[in-house]
Amino acid sequence: MSFINKWKIDDGPSPRESVRLFQYYIEKEGLVFREFNTTQGIQGKSRSIDAIRFPELDTGIYTARGNYSEIRQLIENHLVELIEVHKWGFYGLGQLIGKKEIVEKYWNPKEIKLVLITANLTSFHPETNTDPPTEEVFKKFGVSVFVPK
Image 1 (cartoon, one colour):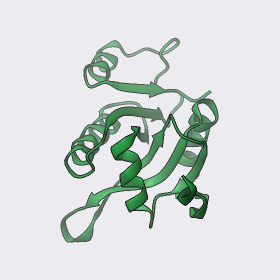
Image 2: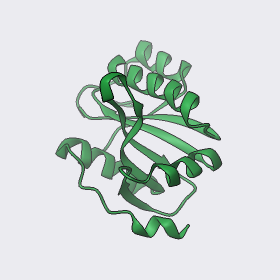
Image 3: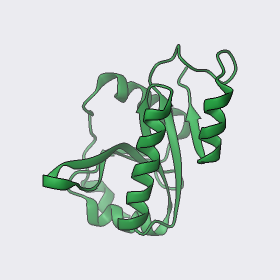
């Protein structure tokens, strides 16, 4: 995949979001694209997700902007994770479920997994501060949760 060489490392818009995503990347690796615009919305409003990751591919963090035809090939041929960095709760879950529906409709994915990276480290932890009712809903929709250290 030589076309990847032309992409640029992306600093990202939010320092907190960038730190949490980078922590996930350090642990999991893979090929990551920041601020992936799933499709154009009404009046040109973008419908972006914080990141997408291809766990089976080479490592690196890149910007998605301007590389959508290459990304389409990757989505059609590889497992893709849709990643949202958000506080623990249903807002991030809703973002993931909605974006999954859009990606399935417009991008013809081979396989999708959903990941919520918690942005607020004090609100949830699967071992020290559990939330069984919310966790059950996340499991029902197949959403994995990553809690940065």
